[in-house]
Image: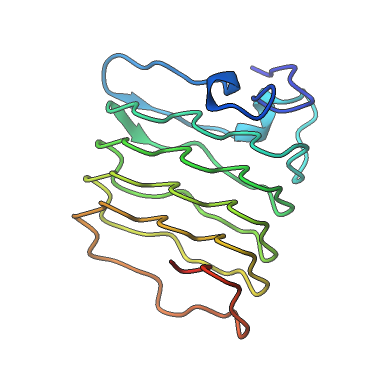
Length: 157
């Protein structure tokens, strides 16, 4: 199944303009999230806030879809899984060059999350990983290394 949202899943700057799923019952998301945007998915996120809040507070979400994008935009995944208390594993995050707020609050309040993804980025941006795992009280596995050699302001806040 493919979507037709070439400008992303948000319309405007207010959080109320972000598309958001409602899930009832234990659910395992799968497949390439970029397929929501086009029938020919790419590895480039097209707009700021593209997937912001998309699964926020979906407490029955057990697994996340694939997030294969390597070219990100500002706030593209901000709060995407915030409050997803049944999520136990985070998806792979392959991007090596980050943008401002791109992963801000991404997993905030995911109390079931036990494994954090590797964070392979070598180029960080302002607040890129800010509060990404805030409230993730069950984390037992975290990345072995953080390859970035220059930090940006609030990047690991």
